[in-house]
Amino acid sequence: MSIDIQWVREDSQLADLCAQWQQQPFIAIDTEFMRVDTFYPITGLVQVGDTQRAWLIDPLLVNDWAPFAALLEDPAVMKVLHACSEDLEVLHRLTGTLPEPLFDTQLAAAYLNYGFSMGYSRLVEQVLSVELPKGETRSDWLQRPLSETQVRYAAEDVQHLAELYLALDPRLSEDKRRWLLEDGAELAAGLRREVDPELLYRESKLGWRLTPQQLAVLRALTAWREREARQRDVPRNRIVRENCLWPLARFQPGDLTSLAKVEDMHPRTVRQDGATLLQLIRDAADTPVESLPERLPPPLPLEAAACLKKLRAVGQREAEALGLAPELTLRRKILESLLKSGYPHGPYELPDSLRGWRRERMGQALLDVLENPT
Image (tube, rainbow, N blue to C red; front, side):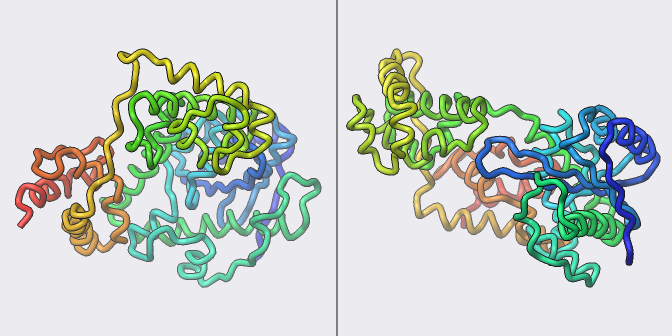
């Protein structure tokens, strides 16, 4: 099937098109971006499409994204994307807003039990019997002009995305469609929530092994790295490599020679930021006792594996009853949070991360399993 490809390079043109798209029941959206040496993605292309046409919006020429932001927020127009977490970040940075309502075709495939976390090409082949060409996903989307192959790839992607929506949406029950849209809203809400750099130290896998004083150092280093990465617009590991943070907090080197000996420490980091790191460590190490962070909880013991297995079975049974991919029901992090709330003897409390239909349909069953472990 041929597709009509139209470039959008002017603000007025985009505004006119957004007014037209707001009269449609849905639009398919895809993005192409570069993110190699930057913290934030650099948008190379935004594609909008239906089953017949693809509009390629050039973000290197378009400046006024307000009409597109209004379209993204229009509750009357369904926004269709696939595996959209990175696309959402691109759109949020570009327009300052996020699509709502949001229909993620990867999630739709899972709700219809095609499989969990299905790649786009595989889903298109399975649902539409179309084999997509490979090879342009890693190409330079900031070059101009784009190659004919790039243009065709980008246009066909968004065309087939629209076709996927028309094929998958009618197969969803009313409940599954509502749950899918709730998941989409949660994806967007998660991106809107600002991550406090001062709390990132809690994500350290080995943080539980550190004393409160060492955690204060880890907190300072992690927060500084996050802020610097954002300000300099470089990947976090270009500031300080991830594997260095824990030993820096644990051993707290006091001079540049000791700093350079930390495992995985890049010489560039020592040259550029060594003095700053040493000062951060000294200052955080002197944190008053009343301001020290609490110790982080240890991981669950090996013997908790049996409980986890029983909790996972609750989700598997629900998935079988509903005819959806088991991975959709209960994430491991949720089950671990539940167990940590009272292991080994209880009482247990459902974590806030267990929301919506999952909490409604499985919350009590999970608590029942823990209260009656035999």
